Image 1 (cartoon, rainbow, N blue to C red):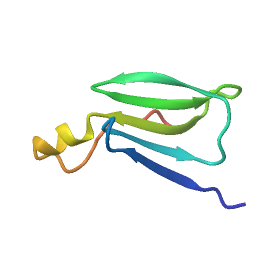
Image 2: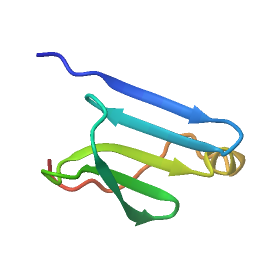
Image 3: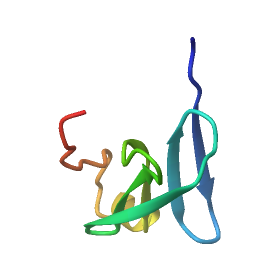
Image 4: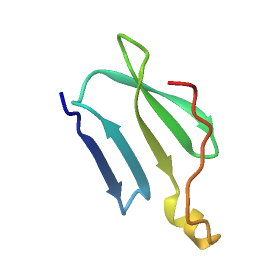
Amino acid sequence: MKKKMRIHYDNLGDYLEIMFGEPRPSYYEDLGNDNLVRKDEKTGKIIGFAFWNVRKRQEKQMRDIEIELPVL
């Protein structure tokens, strides 16, 4: 079964979100530095990531967003 990955960027809010699979009840955990991990409410599995202040990162000539991931 193929799963979808959705990428959404809100230019006004300067917010980037990457989501895996179909939408479902979830919650966010703050990873620091304006990075969030999205987890499934029932299973606690990672279903996405969110990043605030994306343009600000580019202004610092940061091309990639790096975060430490827990072992999946």
